[in-house]
Amino acid sequence: MNELKKKSIEVVVDTAVSSFSEGLISRYRSEVNDLSGVINMKKNNCFIAELGEEFMFYSAFVRSFDSSFGNVLEKMGNNIAKLSYEVKGNIESFILPDQIQRIASVLDSYLDHSATPDVCHYSEYTSIYPKDITSYKRNHVTDNYFFNADKNEHYLIELKASGDLDNKKSKAEKSALLEEYFLLKNRLRNDKTAKVKIFFGTAYNKFGEGKPWKQERVKQFFSDDELLIGKDYWNFVCDDDNGFDIIFQQYKKSIKNIIKRFIKEYQTYYLCA
Image 1 (tube, one colour):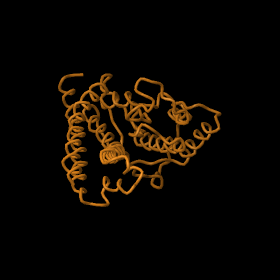
Image 2 (image 1 turned 30 degrees about the horizontal axis):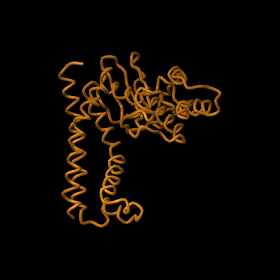
Image 3 (image 1 turned 90 degrees about the vertical axis):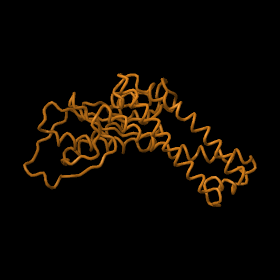
Image 4 (image 1 turned 180 degrees about the vertical axis):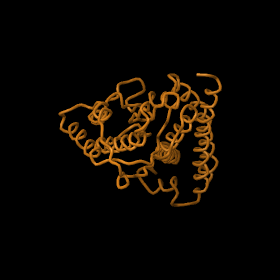
C-alpha cells in the first residue's frame, strides 16, 4: 500500500472515532441534570446503583458505545472503500419471476440440507429476458455496493457491524442478497465482462481475529467464498492484505485519547453533579 493511501485511511479512522466520541460526550454533558438521561437512569436500578457511581457510569457508557458504534464502523468502512472503489447507493433494475423462484428453490435446498452453498447455484443460472420489463422494475437502495472499475467487478455486501448474525435471519439475509444480485446482473446484462459478487461480512470475528468462525447456521446459507469475516472484511474494503492492521493500529491510537477524555468528563460532570 502506498503511503498516501495509508495516511488517508488513518485520517478516515481517526475522524470516525473522534466524531463519534464528540457526539457521546455532548450527549452526556447535556444529560447531567436530566433524570431520564442514560447515565442517571442507571441510578433507578437499585441493584446496579449499589455497585457505585463509577460502575454505573462505565456500565452505561459501554452499553451506549456498543449499541451505536456499529453504525460508525459501517460508515467508516464505506468511506475507506471510496479510496479503492466507487461506492454506489442504489440499484435501478428489474427482477424476473423465474429468478425469484430460483432464489426460493436454492434456499429451500440449503434449508433441508439437500445442497450446500455454492456460488454456481446462482452465478450459472440464466434467464430469457422478455421485451417488456416494465412490471418487473425496482429501485433498490443498498448500503454496501462497491465497484472495481479496473476489474469491472461489482460487490454487494451485507455487513453486520456487530460481528454477529441472528441464526434465524441467515436465510432472509441470503435471500435479500440474491435479489440484489439478480437486480444488478439484469442491469448489466449487456456487459459480457462484468462480474457480480455477493458477500456476508462482519466488522470483527466474534470468536477472535485469526480464529475459525463457527456460526454454522450462517454457513448453512453462505459458502466460504461469500464470507468476509472481521479482518477479511477490512482487507477487502482497503483492497489490501494489510488493510486491517493499518486500520486497527490507528484505531488504538485514536481510542486511547478518547478513553482519557471520557474519564475526565465523568470526573468533571458526574462526580461533581
